Image (cartoon, rainbow, N blue to C red; front, side):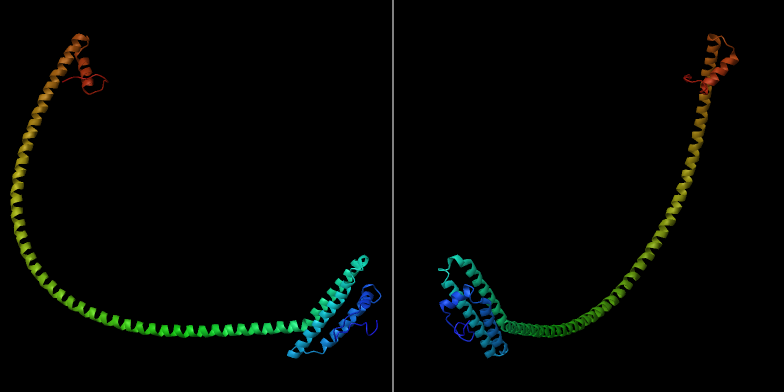
Length: 290
């Protein structure tokens, strides 16, 4: 490819139609054209310092011219597509290859700028974080001082409350001592009065107990006499009743014996044994009605 036909990275060049056709019909190697652009772009970019404002502007200019070269090549190919219908797939493939290559080259050229900007952003983020930490520390210091002040104020209030409670306790103790002394005096007087009343009550109760004991002794003698008399009378009545029952039972038993002798044709001794057995309950279901 002649110098006139060459795509120069240093300036915007209008590619002649025959040159574009030569690129896209295989007469001129696209790889050579792209390689020339790449070498020129990387050479110029390699001389630039991305940490300076002018250097970053130069790199952006190089990237712009790479993009412009992409536009020229792509436009040249696109301008002959209509007359190149049968080879459209080849042309489109070469166009895409050129676009992809130059897009990648653009990214590579801008990489120092991107890295520098990312680094600056990282530095800015760290600075912001540092400021936020300092602000948090400042607020924490303020809160700590406020908490310390509140603690001291509370301690002062606690001391005042303790002093007030101590004074109140002292006054309460003094009042309780006075009340205790007055109560002790009053209780002593009341105890003395109760003791005198209790002594009088004990003396009165002693006299009453003596009178009651004397009266109860007399009543006890009288009750004993009455009991003895009643017991003697009851024993006499019981003896009389037993004697009467004995005679009545003997009469009934003798009548039963006589009836057995007559009706059962047994002797008198046997009849007495039968009646005696019945009277003692030795014969079941048989009894004598007295």
